[in-house]
Structures are given as structure tokens and as C-alpha cells.
Image (tube, rainbow, N blue to C red):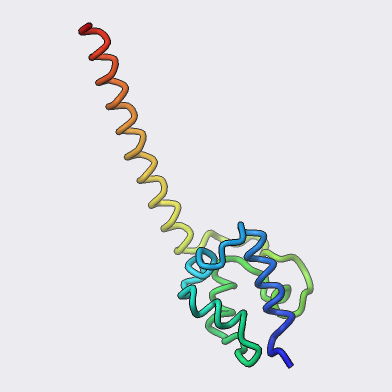
Length: 115
């Protein structure tokens, strides 16, 4: 008998719905990709309370995850600190990229004006 088979099936659905990248999904959960892979592939490995908490932290409705009832995502959930940190990092990277593009445009315009 596959331990937590239905829960694992719902986790696989979440992975597919998020783009199908199991490793990236594991990192979103603050898990090592190998750990999530082991959970999902082992018939004898169950899902720990810590892993369930990680799902709750990213907004997954644990009632749906464990019993298949209700909505997949929790309603009125504040963005958790991990996702907020990713958003902040991406915003900073976007600002850097924009600055590089603007600088490059100025240089190219200056080069064209000097011809």
C-alpha cells in the first residue's frame, strides 16, 4: 500500500499546475529537491507535519491537500515571507536590468550622434 498516495497525487497536481518543475517547486517549499522526490516516489515514505506546514506557508489549503475537499489555495492569505523575499529580489534584479538597458541606450545614442 502506497502511504499517503492521494496526498502525493495532489502534490503532483500542484507541481504540474505550477509549471511542472519539481525541483523548483521543492525550493519554493524550502525543501531539497531530492527530499521532495523521495517523498513522492517512495511507497513507504509518508508526508511529515513539517512538510505539510511548508505547504500551508505557501498558501495551500491543507484540507484540500489532505482530504481533497475545498479550494486548492487558502483565501485571504497574506504573502508569506519567502515569497515576499523572492518578489523583493526580482524587483531589485529588474531595477538593475533597467539601469543597464538605459545606460546602453545612452551610450548607443551618443555613439550615433558622434558619427
